[in-house]
Amino acid sequence: KLRRLDEWNEQRRSHAKYYTSALSKSELTPVAVHPDAEPVWHLYVVRSTEREELQKRLTDEGIATGIHYPTPLHLQPAYKYLDIPLSALPVTERVAQEIVSLPMYPELTPVDLEAVVKTATRTSIGVIN
Image 1 (cartoon, one colour):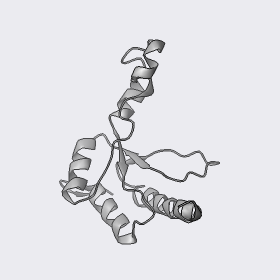
Image 2 (spheres, helix red, strand yellow):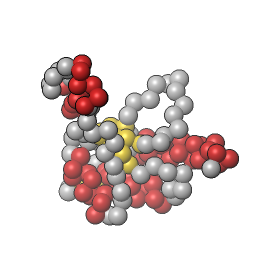
Image 3 (spheres, rainbow, N blue to C red):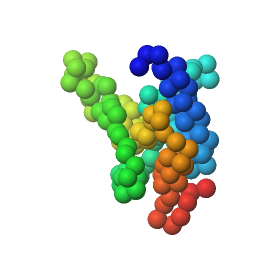
Image 4 (cartoon, rainbow, N blue to C red):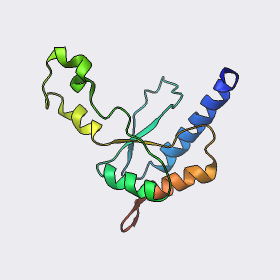
């Protein structure tokens, strides 16, 4: 698989560029990327204050999502020794409740990407724009 890594990374970058552009006018907030960074987009994570509704809508259309790293680091058992209490980092804790990973893999087609965006931006009253 290493022989295809550069190609796959470029495909994921292309997919991420599409998502970022297509979601720019929606209520979903993509993860910020430093201008000097060149991510490989192992995950494409967005924030939504209506995460459960978003996941249900996508699941109902056969589109898988994920919640990667749902527990903030300061609340992980491995960091218990730091004795950082719940609510000590409210922004981190809120974000952990809002993040959801959209489909991201090299083989996504333009039709797949469009379906994800259309479904993700559809609300009960229509499309967010």
